[in-house]
Structure formats: C-alpha cells, structure tokens
Amino acid sequence: MPGERLPLGFVFRSRAKEEKAPLADKATVTVSKQPRDPQAPKGRPTPKRNEAQSQRRSVANTSLTRKDAAKRQREERRAQLERQRQALAGGDERYLPVRDKGPVRKFARDWIDSRFNMAEFFLPMAVVILVLSIVPVGSLQNIALLLWLVVIVLIVLDSILSGFRLRKALTERFPTDNRKGVIAYALMRSLQMRRLRLPKPQVKRGERP
Image 1 (spheres, rainbow, N blue to C red):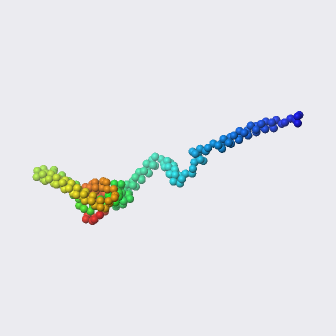
Image 2 (tube, one colour):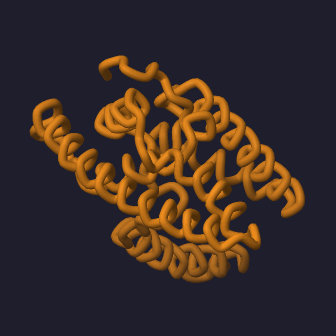
C-alpha cells in the first residue's frame, strides 16, 4: 500500500541475497570447469603393489642411520665372502666368483686338474735352482742356469700343447658357448700347485672331465 512502510531488515536482506546469488553461481561454475591437477593427492592413480613395496622399503632404509647402514653393508659383505669361500672349497656354482662361473670354465678347470702340468712344478723347481745358484761352486751355478733354461722351455712347450688340446676339447663340447678368455684362465690355473688351486680340484689325476 502507498503509505505502508517496509521493515529495514527485509530491504537489506533481499538485496544481499540478490547480490550473493549470482556470485555463488559463478563460483560454482568456475570450480566445476577447472580441471583437476593430475599431481594433486586425490588426482593420483592408486600405486601398484610393487611400487608401494619399494616406497615402503625406501622409507625403511632412510630411517636407518648412516652407522647402521654401514654396519649392515659390512655384514652382508662378510656373509657374501663366506659363501664364496665355501663355494671355492666345495665347487658350489651358485656362489662362485664371476670369473669361475659357468659350465665352460668348470670343464676347463677339470681338464687342467685331471693331468700333470709342467707349469705346476715351476715354484718347487725355482726354489731348487735358487739354492744351487747361491752355492759358491762354479759347476753348480752352471747346472742351475741350465736347469732354469730347461724348465722355462718345458713350461712354454707344455702350455702351448695344452692350449691347443684344450681349445679342441672346448670346441667339441661347447660349440655354441662363449669361450673367450677360457684358455688363458686354464693356463693360469696350471701355474698353481694343485693343492693351492681355487676352486678346489673336483677330479682326480687321470680322470676324464
């Protein structure tokens, strides 16, 4: 009615609602149209099981102090060396060093261990020759020099012959396997005395590998 007064609260409240309504609608539309950040916590895909386990292990590892980590590494290294020592004594292929692993190198070791090699007598003969060479007798020193030359020639000839025979045996037994460095590996083993060889010999002399 023309002369009727409206309450002040009604006037201000209606204007406030009318002004806030479009702002709220616009904000709702803006938020709904904004794309979700793929790096946001809720926008990340659920990690796989192996990823979650690796994350837990990394967290567990970071919780170790530097001293504890070094101690654990020393213990693991000690255990690995002990396994290798037992493998070198018993021939367990699982824990042998890399240079001794594989059927090709095992065959080469057995082939060398099954025969007499001139090179394995080098150290004993060297001691004898050394003793003769220091004796103040001219004839004994000449004999020592002659023995030294004979031993060297015999070792070289025996090593060459052994290398050719072993190469032929490896070619027949392992035609498709990698044989690189095996001949040198076997000849270096032949230089050692039988009881000092590692891995320990697994065959007897004269036994066919």
